[in-house]
Amino acid sequence: MSIFKKIKATVGLLQQLDLDKIGTLAAKVDLNKMVGLVSSMKQEDLQKLMKFMEGGKKKHAFPEVDGDFYDLKEWLTPEERAIQLQVREFMREHIAPIANEYWLKDEFPHHIIPEMAKLNICGLTYQGYGCPGKSNLLEGFLAMEMARVDCSTSTFFGVQSGLAMGSIYHCGSEEQKQQWLPPMQRMEKIGAFGLTEPEVGSGAAGGLTCTCKREGDTWILNGQKKWIGNATFADLVIIWARDLDDGNVKGFIVEKGFEGFQAEKIRGKMALRIVQNALITLTNCAVPESNRLQNANSFKDTANVLRMTRAGVAWQAVGCARGAYESALQYTNERKQFGRTISSFQLVQDLLVQMLSNLTAMQTMVCRLSQLQDNGKLTDEQASLAKVFCTLRTRDIVSHARELFGGNGILIEYDIARFVADAEAIYSYEGTKEINTLIVGRSITGQSAFV
Image 1 (cartoon, rainbow, N blue to C red):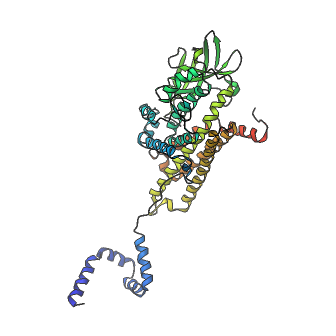
Image 2 (spheres, one colour; image 1 turned 180 degrees about the vertical axis):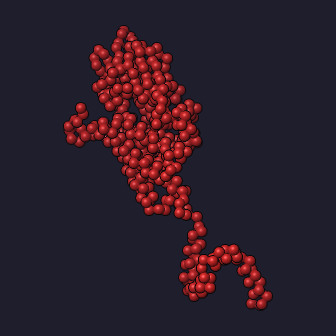
Image 3 (cartoon, helix red, strand yellow; image 1 turned 90 degrees about the horizontal axis):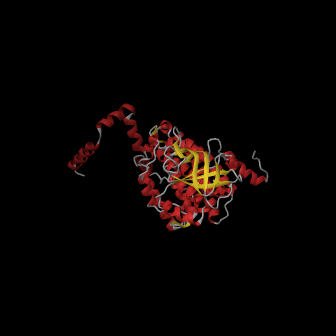
């Protein structure tokens, strides 16, 4: 190489040097010693050092955040999977942007109902009356998809499609089904389900204080119902009452505007704030015989509806837990402390794996539950066991998720506080942990421990 080329190469090298950085480095280390060490290194060692230094500059590629670790979605048919993804997109586009706002306002976003109706999923598992006639497994996945974004939306839909429509589908006459189910399926009519009372929750099987008495072709209803979701704006409420003449529980379709019917919004809730729960007061409310559910003649008929929907609540718990887990995993991949994302810390990964383990166990349990339901083999105790286990584990998962968010976990903008609060309601409704435990205990021991 000529002297001119050497000078040119040296000038080019000097132009690439950052003299400020060299000065900073010189203040910290002995440059002569460092140059000597690097010069004496073998070529292969020098290449390893350069590779290590270059690797530190590359941005880490995080895996996709997905709570379905065992790919349980593969149990769905391609058509069912498409419906699941359609509901996921609806929740992402229409619910996720407004959930926190309406949760804080304690209001229901009525404008979403027509958009939800377009999904054509209301009364999903029922045959006829405009209903899709799909599987219980798909219905469970859809309940999960809703709850993983907002438990209130999932609850609203469960009351409409499960409890209200289910009562008419399983206990109504053919005329009642023809009259009510098609408009409810199109979500032109919104329903509610009135069983729980101010003084009667777990003891509803034999202790209803709301009464009914027949007078000719009219039934007179008196009493109160509490925690009735959708009731502040529902077009019809299914009211369960004890017959003063024979003592049996009967069901009635009480329409909005019936004289003697009053629904007062319950305020001050800490959970499911988007759901509009009401205290219903019935004062000599006259209901025609044509509005009595013709095939509801005892609490056993009510229990048939509850068994069906209890499986749905277990799926809601899974959705709540999955939403919390996925939110926490995403957050730990973004949040940095000590110069690293916190998902790289051992204790954080331990919590994440605990959450995923519980979530995966819950998902496999409810999938099997829905398979039993599709095969007509679901029992009360099987539904109760899933409700107990899933709601308990959901509380653990949302608690760990909030822990991973640190102080940000109590801010509504990060969603996790909403999941934590809503999990408490799911834990309690559709049968408490204690009642469902005793149902399972009676099954496995053959002995009833109920009072």
